[in-house]
Amino acid sequence: MSGTLTDLDGQVMVAPRVLMQALDNGTILITQAVMGLRDGGFLVLVLERVDSPQQGVLRLQRFDADLNPVGEPRTFSSDAYPDAELVELGAGAGGPLESPVMVLRSQQGGTQAIRVLGNLFGEVTTQTLAVTTPGEVPWFGVATTSRRLQVGWLSEFRAPEGGGSMFDWWGRFWGLGHGGSPMDWTPGPAPLSLHRYSQWVRLEELPENWMGALVMTSTQSPESHTLQAVRYCAP
Image (cartoon, rainbow, N blue to C red; front, side, top):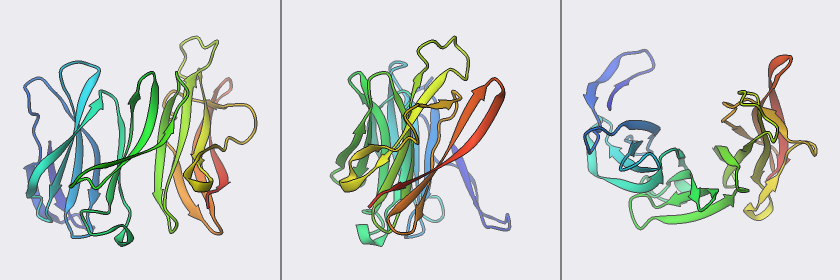
């Protein structure tokens, strides 16, 4: 995997160079996330699938401002299809190497869990935010707010009488409520009608302890895709 660094005018600041390579022949590196650090460096998170289609390894490498590697990469066990994001919590969470966290979806038995991994360059801490109902897959979005880290997710599942169409998916919108507990914030009793690739959530902090979420709902007949806004309380 290679990378380069340009300024806002497109001027090349660091020429293209190899950043990370697969550890074994025949494996594939898949970029999961890239994030700037407060000291001017960068974090790059990649997935390398190993051993079997069910297993993978997440590799986290720190780079300086000139894209030179700093230290050894950190590795985290993973399934083959994780969802992971790097999030900067800010100076209130500590120094430049203490404030980044990783939000990760991973298998937990027959369910999926959303976890936050902290202290990524020391003794890693793990906090489980939510565990989904068996058969459901969470696709999440994150936001660093003035109060704390916020996470919202679509918990998706195939419609019971679906016929294999990309539109045969339902889901419910969840977020963190009082005390950081998972809350179902779906507007109304019925699940949201989704396309198979409605696999994202966008979050925004609103005034007075409110959060806003943007998701996409879809219908097959008539074929349409609609952006839906959800407003919910997240003290």
